[in-house]
Length: 116
Image (cartoon, rainbow, N blue to C red):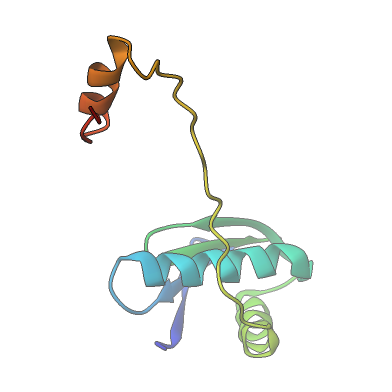
C-alpha cells in the first residue's frame, strides 16, 4: 500500500495524496479514509472533499495550525481500523411483457438477446 502524502492547500487546508493509479483501488482507499474520518470527529477538521487521488481536508484555522492537523491526521490514519469499502448495489426492475412488442426493444436497449 502506498504512503499518504500531506500538502498545504491554501491557508486552512490539507490535501492528502493517495499514491497509486487513478482507479477502483485508490477510490476505495479514499472512500474508506473519508468515511472513517467523518466518524472520528477529529478536532479542527471542518470539511472533507474526496477527489480521484486526493482528499481535501479543510480546517478551522483558529483552532489548530497546519502542523498540528497533519500530525493528528497521520496519527489517526495509523490507528484507524481498515476495512473494505461497501459499495451500494442498485437493482432496477424493468417491467416488460414476455410476449409483447417491448421485449425486443428492451433487449436491444440492454444489449442482451431476447429469448424465443
